Length: 421
Ligand code: 5AD
Ligand code: SF4
Image 1 (cartoon, rainbow, N blue to C red):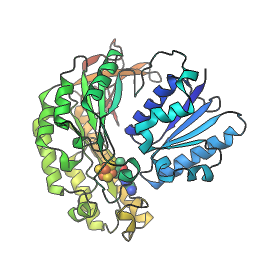
Image 2: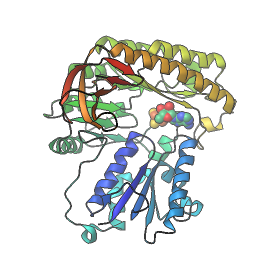
Image 3: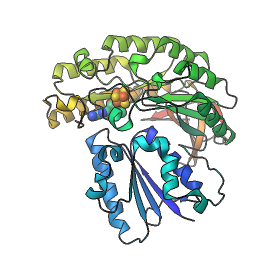
Image 4: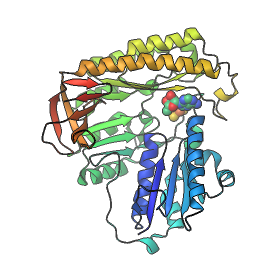
């Protein structure tokens, strides 16, 4: 049987896209391998959001291209956002790349794969497989693309305009996954709040999903603060099926920077949103993305980001130094912040957030948690791994359990970013 090796960079949408490619290939008899050397096909799924992500992907692609020389017949595909941004020029930059499939082509990925490997020639009658993060949790994209054009972000250029997946397709995908044993679905979109298809908006979609039997836990990401409405929070609070977690990227704390970033909300609007969420959903985990060193950001403005972070008490946050991306509005703004300054700000921010994360985990010790068991942690005395109703990782050593079970437990201690039962 032919084999495929995946190297996936970037966000959960990329993981979902790799899963889709994997599934289409498995229908043609491909099996997954964890050895790039022994595989017939290597697929590198790339991210363009920061220069460092592109550098890392290019390094890996070059390494695979070198290895390919001693493996006759091996194919190397580059897919995803960097593939979209750089197109076939990647084949010239890195000889050895056989196929470049940009993120916008994910809509017609079945045709692309059919052109490469016609199913009639490759179909081995292999049964459909379960993909995703674990055997009991999975992703379902509900919308793709982004129309927001945040000034720093390349995503609208590489992923294209917003497009929502028709409701019927989402419902049947979810039901198929449940039938295959999935208990928790994370609905994905660059901006899920913009979901709208045939008059069904995102809160309505979530409500419908919560009525599906067998779907025990529902998550979604990413929410844009400007579209995160009371209606959405009310739906989240309406059923225990909804995880008490929302990822709500704030990006910055100063209104002038938020405006330059084209985020369309103010810092006080964001703080009010957090109050509304915490009033309706006690113990909600709120997580965020934060960017430092946007062009012209002053030290005082950076301190506003720090105060917002102090007040917001995010459970965790992804924190980044601004990286100019060609073609975006911010790339043509004068970049006044030096690399050293950006890194110093990032270090200070990470230190603050790490302390807050540690406190939040510690405050969860002794509180009743509902933990969905997702698998075994082989390295650690075969403990069970799981996630609480928020976004916290939990390790359970003693209870008899199996993946898919939801256990009510209390953590006895916390070790950094893990609760231990
Ligand atoms: N530089 C640094 N971080 C960026 N992000 C998006 N574009 C850039 C950029 N040019 C971050 C934002 C976004 C997350 C996915 O990546 O915080 O929310
Ligand atoms: Fe990028 Fe902004 Fe769209 Fe998020 S909402 S993908 S940060 S443009």
